[in-house]
Image (tube, rainbow, N blue to C red; front, side):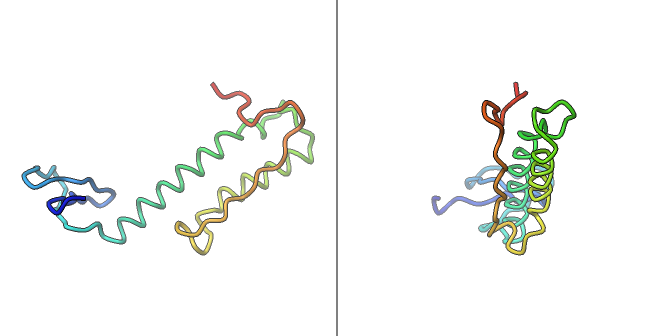
Length: 114
Protein backbone atom coordinates (compact mmCIF):
# COMPACT_ATOMS: atom_id res chain seq x y z
CA UNK A 1 0.00 0.00 0.00
CA UNK A 2 1.14 3.49 -0.65
CA UNK A 3 2.23 5.81 2.11
CA UNK A 4 -0.96 7.88 1.81
CA UNK A 5 -3.31 4.93 2.35
CA UNK A 6 -5.46 5.26 5.41
CA UNK A 7 -8.34 3.22 6.75
CA UNK A 8 -11.91 4.21 7.40
CA UNK A 9 -12.81 2.18 10.47
CA UNK A 10 -16.23 1.20 11.84
CA UNK A 11 -17.13 -1.10 14.70
CA UNK A 12 -17.53 -4.05 12.30
CA UNK A 13 -15.38 -3.30 9.28
CA UNK A 14 -12.90 -1.14 7.46
CA UNK A 15 -12.04 0.11 4.00
CA UNK A 16 -8.92 1.59 2.45
CA UNK A 17 -9.10 5.22 1.59
CA UNK A 18 -6.67 7.70 0.11
CA UNK A 19 -5.93 11.17 1.33
CA UNK A 20 -8.77 13.42 0.32
CA UNK A 21 -11.43 10.70 0.48
CA UNK A 22 -14.30 11.56 2.75
CA UNK A 23 -15.41 9.46 5.68
CA UNK A 24 -18.95 8.11 5.81
CA UNK A 25 -21.18 8.38 8.85
CA UNK A 26 -19.88 6.23 11.69
CA UNK A 27 -16.32 5.92 10.32
CA UNK A 28 -13.14 7.11 11.95
CA UNK A 29 -9.80 7.63 10.24
CA UNK A 30 -6.86 5.42 11.17
CA UNK A 31 -3.37 4.66 9.86
CA UNK A 32 -3.71 1.03 10.98
CA UNK A 33 -6.44 -1.55 11.38
CA UNK A 34 -6.99 -2.31 15.07
CA UNK A 35 -6.19 -5.91 16.00
CA UNK A 36 -9.66 -6.36 17.55
CA UNK A 37 -11.22 -5.45 14.21
CA UNK A 38 -8.90 -7.81 12.33
CA UNK A 39 -9.96 -10.60 14.73
CA UNK A 40 -13.63 -9.73 14.22
CA UNK A 41 -13.40 -9.77 10.42
CA UNK A 42 -11.35 -12.97 10.31
CA UNK A 43 -13.86 -14.70 12.60
CA UNK A 44 -16.69 -13.54 10.35
CA UNK A 45 -14.91 -14.87 7.25
CA UNK A 46 -14.30 -18.24 8.92
CA UNK A 47 -17.94 -18.47 9.93
CA UNK A 48 -19.00 -17.68 6.36
CA UNK A 49 -16.74 -20.49 5.12
CA UNK A 50 -18.12 -22.86 7.76
CA UNK A 51 -21.72 -21.91 6.91
CA UNK A 52 -21.06 -22.67 3.25
CA UNK A 53 -19.66 -26.07 4.18
CA UNK A 54 -22.81 -26.75 6.21
CA UNK A 55 -25.12 -25.67 3.37
CA UNK A 56 -23.38 -27.97 0.90
CA UNK A 57 -24.24 -31.00 3.02
CA UNK A 58 -27.70 -30.00 4.29
CA UNK A 59 -29.18 -32.66 2.02
CA UNK A 60 -27.50 -35.42 4.05
CA UNK A 61 -29.95 -34.85 6.90
CA UNK A 62 -33.25 -34.97 5.01
CA UNK A 63 -35.42 -38.05 5.34
CA UNK A 64 -35.05 -39.13 1.70
CA UNK A 65 -31.26 -38.69 1.47
CA UNK A 66 -29.61 -41.69 -0.22
CA UNK A 67 -27.73 -42.57 2.97
CA UNK A 68 -28.17 -45.36 5.47
CA UNK A 69 -28.56 -44.59 9.18
CA UNK A 70 -24.83 -45.06 9.87
CA UNK A 71 -23.90 -42.60 7.09
CA UNK A 72 -26.48 -40.07 8.31
CA UNK A 73 -25.00 -40.34 11.80
CA UNK A 74 -21.50 -39.73 10.40
CA UNK A 75 -22.71 -36.69 8.48
CA UNK A 76 -24.56 -35.41 11.53
CA UNK A 77 -21.35 -35.67 13.58
CA UNK A 78 -19.40 -33.88 10.82
CA UNK A 79 -21.95 -31.08 10.76
CA UNK A 80 -21.73 -30.74 14.55
CA UNK A 81 -17.93 -30.56 14.28
CA UNK A 82 -18.36 -27.73 11.75
CA UNK A 83 -20.70 -25.89 14.12
CA UNK A 84 -18.09 -26.33 16.88
CA UNK A 85 -15.23 -24.80 14.84
CA UNK A 86 -15.59 -21.34 16.50
CA UNK A 87 -15.07 -23.06 19.88
CA UNK A 88 -11.63 -24.39 18.92
CA UNK A 89 -8.74 -23.10 21.01
CA UNK A 90 -6.92 -21.31 18.17
CA UNK A 91 -9.97 -19.92 16.34
CA UNK A 92 -9.79 -18.02 14.00
CA UNK A 93 -6.02 -18.25 13.41
CA UNK A 94 -5.47 -21.98 13.88
CA UNK A 95 -8.43 -24.03 12.69
CA UNK A 96 -8.60 -27.77 12.25
CA UNK A 97 -11.40 -28.24 9.73
CA UNK A 98 -13.24 -31.55 10.15
CA UNK A 99 -12.99 -34.08 7.34
CA UNK A 100 -16.31 -34.95 5.70
CA UNK A 101 -17.36 -38.59 5.69
CA UNK A 102 -17.27 -40.56 2.47
CA UNK A 103 -20.33 -40.71 0.24
CA UNK A 104 -21.93 -43.71 -1.41
CA UNK A 105 -20.62 -44.41 -4.92
CA UNK A 106 -22.30 -42.18 -7.48
CA UNK A 107 -23.39 -39.57 -4.93
CA UNK A 108 -22.15 -36.00 -5.15
CA UNK A 109 -21.66 -33.58 -2.25
CA UNK A 110 -23.37 -30.94 -4.39
CA UNK A 111 -26.56 -33.00 -4.74
CA UNK A 112 -29.54 -30.71 -4.81
CA UNK A 113 -27.57 -27.49 -5.28
CA UNK A 114 -28.70 -25.25 -8.08
